[in-house]
Each structure stands twice: as C-alpha cells, then as structure tokens.
Image 1 (cartoon, one colour):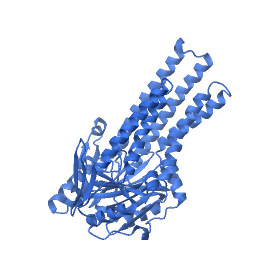
Image 2 (cartoon, one colour):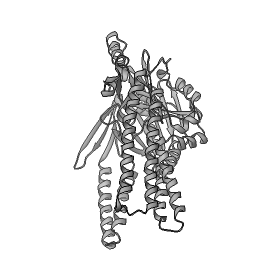
Image 3 (cartoon, helix red, strand yellow):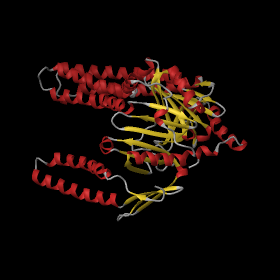
Image 4 (cartoon, one colour):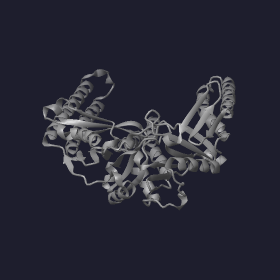
Amino acid sequence: MTGEKIRFHPSVVLENLMRFAIFAVIFLLVSVEERPIEAFLAIGGLLGVAAIILFLRWRRTTVQFNENELIVERNTIFKMKRSIPYSKIASINVNRTIISRMFGTSRLQVNVNSSSNATVPEAVLVFKKDLADRIRNHLSRNMYDSEPVIEAEQGSVVNVDNTDVLVHGLFSQSTMQTISGFIFLAWSIFEMYSDAGGSTGGSSALSLGMFFFVTVVPSVMLIVHYANFKVYRVKDTIYLQHGLISTYRTSFNVSRINAIHVKSTMASRLMGRSYIEADVIGLGSSKDSQRPVLCLLKRNDVIEAVLKDLVPEFVYDRNIIVQPKGAKKAIAAKASLGSAFVAVMAAALTWVVGTTDRTGLSGIERTVVENMFIAAGAAIVLAIILWGYRSYRVKELSLGEDLFTFVNGVVDRRRTTMCYDKVQIVNVSKGPLARRFGLAVGSISLLSSKGSVSVSSGYFTEADLNKVHETVMQRLVNGKYDHRANEI
C-alpha cells in the first residue's frame, strides 16, 4: 500500500450521482405538469452528463500513502494535488451510510487541526471496509505513534442503553424548539375543532406538519444518530462511535479538546439530567458539523463521574464567583426597557384593531383579537421579568490555575470549562448599562469542529474578567503555557 497510487471504490460515482438526482427530481416535479416529455428528456440528459463527469472524475482521482504523508491527486481539467502530512492529522472519522453498507465500503474523513477547514474534512477516502480499516490503522499508527486499539475489545466509560438514547432524542432539543413545535400542535388541534368539517382542514394540516418538522423529525434523527452509543479512552486518545442506519466512528487526542460543555434543557433539568459536548478542532465531517457529544443525557452525578474518567484534564475545584449586586440593577434595567417596548407594541396593535374599520372583523372577533394581543403582551412581559430574575441567579464565573468556567443559560443551561492555553481572543466589553453599574461582559474565542466559536459571560467586574487575559500572559512569561495546545 505504501507508495502505491490507488483509486477510490467506484460506488462514489453512484453516491454522488444520487445527490445530483435529488435536485433533478425536485426540478421534474415542478415542471412535469407543463411539459412532461421535455422535462423527462432534460432530466435524463442531465443525469447522463453528470454520470459521465463523475465517472471521469473518479477514474482520474488517486490517493497515495507515502512514508510521511498522504497525497490525493485529481488529473482532470481542474487539476488538484493535496498533500496531508500524517503529523498534521487531528482525527479520522469513519462513516458508513446505507450505500456504504450495500457495497461493503467505509468513508474515511481525514481532518487536520486547521481553522480554515474546521467544518469540512480535508480528504474523504472511500474503500472496501477491510481496506479502509487497514488504512485507518496505518494512519492512526502514524498519528499516535502506537499500535491501533482493537475497538471491539473496549468497554464504554458510561453505560448508555436504549432508554438513554430515547430520552436524549426527546429532551436534548432546545426548549424554544420544543415549545414552538407544541404551539404548532396546539394550533392545529384548535383549528380542527373550531370548525369541524369546515374550511380550516388545510391550515390545521399545515400546522400539524410544522409540529412534525420542528419537533418529531429532529427527535427521531437524534435517536437514530446516537443509537449504539459508545465512548472510551485509551491513554490520551478518546474513541467515540454511534449510529443505527449510518454509523460514525472517530478518535482524537485529548489535547485537541479546547472546551467542555455540560448542557441541560429545561425539561432535562426537571429530570436531573445533563449531557456533555466538547469543542474539538479537526473533527469536521460536513458543512453542518456539530460538537461531538461525549455523553448523552444522564443523571448529573453520572455526568460528573464521566468527566473525571474521560476528561480529568477539565475537572478542577471551582471557586464560584456570582454576579455582583450591580448586575441585578443592570439586568433589571434591560428587562424594564424590553417590557416597556413590548407593552407599547401590544397597546398599539390593540388600538389599531379596535379603531380600524378595514380589518373585516365583526365586533366579537375584534374583542377576541384585542384580548389576544393584550394577553400575549402580558405573557411576554412576565417572561422577560422571569428571565431577568433567573439570569442574575444563574450566571457564574470560576477561575482556576489552569482552567476557568462560564455558566450561562436561563432556559437551556450550559457550563463551559476552558483551558487558558486554548484561548485565542479575550474580549472584555462595557456597554452603556454595564458602565453605569461598573461592570463588564467577557467573550472568549476558541476553535472547534464548528469553526470559530465565542463563549460569553454574564455581568462581572472588569477586574475579574481581566484575570483570564492576565493569567494567559502570566503563563507565557513563567513558562507554564503549553505551546502544543495551539499548534496547527
């Protein structure tokens, strides 16, 4: 295999052609009623041309594994030659889609520790499963300078059963997404019974469809995506795998982790559960890459145990700093401004409905609409007040010797622990309200599989927030700074 130029499995032609065919079918459905024969001929011709182009692209694309690097070369009209040193590879994801299982292949997604391509792999290699496994072992041996781990013999750090997967799929979605979905469901039920057998059937069906699209479908996708979840650590390497229909496997060195997030939604907190995500550079597998989940929704005590076993580098005794009393005044002022704006808008809309004759509403209908605006305005004002109260009580800051933590989230909670040596930019800003009460807001820039991300704090004193930057600089001066943390 070393030094030999080899081609990908020919199934990549069919897989890429199927992606093109989806758009072709959409075009066909739109145009088939007007000119069906021309539409079929056009689609057939486009698919034929696409098949020829994709075949030639596959035929003229090779990959070569040398002693210190892999080279992907394409000798078409638009030539391409990409060299990836083994020492720069951050992770190798193994994805097996339905088509991959049909042809017995695996997709190796090679990622490097780069901010420019953080969300997409530098190379996607498709081979027969046995060959793909040998190539992955070969690359892993060069990445980690050790023999590859036999994954089948490793037990998971945390036991995740089907119930845990189901609970995670149902309750890890954002609270706002869940609420909006059930609003659509309630509205569809209201429309179905408000005019039984009348003209609202189509509208209720649309609302019900939105409920399935916003709430049900994402839950099912999460359940399918995280089925057969397994995570474990061998030396300094974390291994992660899951998936029911399309399977996913990856591994990465713990030094590639820039931050650890312990997250919970409002519903999961009622059950005393949370889950763990990580910001890891070099895990991009698609344009909509997400943070890798290191543990699904489990009890909070289990989550703390998983952190100690899996990523002890991000566990420390937190000395919690709560927001000062001035923050209560700043948050109250912001809530007051928001409440006033909502009250004025609700009153204006109520007045417009009550005084305009062109609405086409009867007297009773106008009264109902006016009351709806008033009730909605009152509910939003109450929500703003509750948000302000919880925002003051929830947000925290912790500063350790090597790590620091921001706690955020009124409805969906997030505790983010970061390493000083992984910080890219520290931004301490003071808006009009913050300046009025002698406070500031901190923002930390990091790299992750989602690209560049920013983590913000609540209202704290400028001196406390400046300690993050001061600690980074002190570590550079006294030699504690680990330069390997940000090597690309």
